[in-house]
Amino acid sequence: MQKIVIAIDGYSGCGKSTTARAVAGLLGYIYIDTGAMYRSVTLYFIDNHVSLTDPRAVSKALEQIDITFHYNATKKVNEVYLNGLNVEKEIRGMDVSQKVSDVSAIKEVRHALVAQQRKMGKSKGVVMDGRDIGTVVFPDADLKIFMTADLYVRAERRQKELLGKGQLVELEEVIENLRSRDEIDTSRKESPLKKAANAIEIDTTHITFEEQIELITNLATSKL
Ligand code: C5P
Image (tube, rainbow, N blue to C red; front, side, top):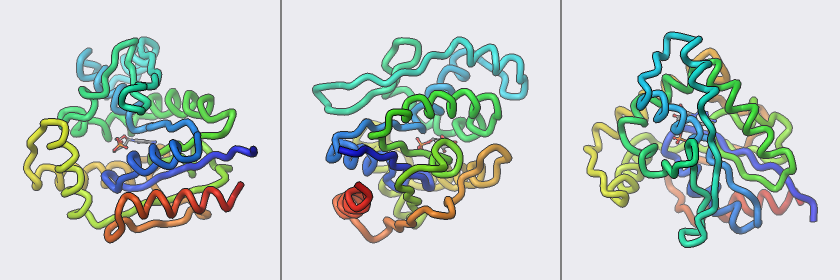
């Protein structure tokens, strides 16, 4: 059967990852969480005290970074590995969340990750979520979704998700983090977050994950 590329972009905390993962599972596609890639680079930069204002240090660090995804058969999810180590837990914490948008605004970082993402989606049959998938990584994607949701609702969902991972974070802190990431992501010079001209916008404020998944899966099926 013909396989397509599905690009899902949008603001932080709209439920892109959960939705994209489920849609990929239903279609038998590969799911690539590009946010996890930017988060892994950020973790490396924090651990190795890489100065974000030193382009040579950044380029040198990027050469030392190897990001891969491996399927966890027990959890039935793709997990991210940084230089051979599973960093799923470390990259989701607030320390990485607070720095990731500054790291993602660096040109060298974007060029390296976009090149890898294009390779990963080359053979199609992929659902990729992020901020620039429909605009920069795969401008010819067969289906482009742009997800939005009310900031407060997004923060509540993210807070619940963090709690599920054992992290108790005040709602105000989550709201501030989402607000600040949206601001940096939409205003940066290099591939800012914006809706691709031919993307379908889905506001997830008042719909459930199940409804989001059904909506996108139906849109995908109509393209096959
Ligand atoms: O998707 P997630 O919230 O995990 O992404 C974390 C951050 O990574 C975003 O706030 C953004 O700064 C960056 N990102 C990006 N481009 C992508 C995916 C994520 O700049 N394609």
